[in-house]
Image (cartoon, rainbow, N blue to C red):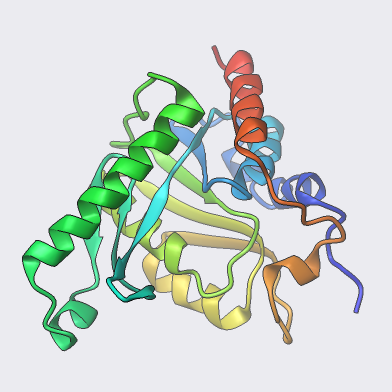
Length: 217
């Protein structure tokens, strides 16, 4: 099985070719999910002449079962709760507040690490193009979409290089548009579809954001 993309740069360029209708749109902004989504988003933003920023999502896991999400917190301090999990497990509000506060601190740390003291962009009335390097279950991206709804984005576009078809179909009901380059039948994992899937570092994220802001300053 041959990989679909050489690396995240290649994936971003191919993804950008499917998003040409947004090129130069003054209302549009590319929001990349750190860290792996940032190199992809950088290429999309550069090709479409759009600003780039990060949109950080932190899962709020059930204590003792952290892999199970009872919600998520996203850029702008937006809290999205999974009411089904909370009710099923009878999770008290105090527990939700405690975990959310901890994850909020980590999100704030990442916000500072990536954009220093610059505030997150206002997304009211904007066309938000959410970019990641791929979707497996799509849980973080779903939280991002819900958070953007709460921030009154006018249009939400989920854009990824690769994802299972069933996950892409899920997003048709959640986002205003889903754009995906490859939807392989046998998915396995996002990393399988890249020749080079080295971990993106915080330093690389900062460098790409700085380079993008230099173009749009």
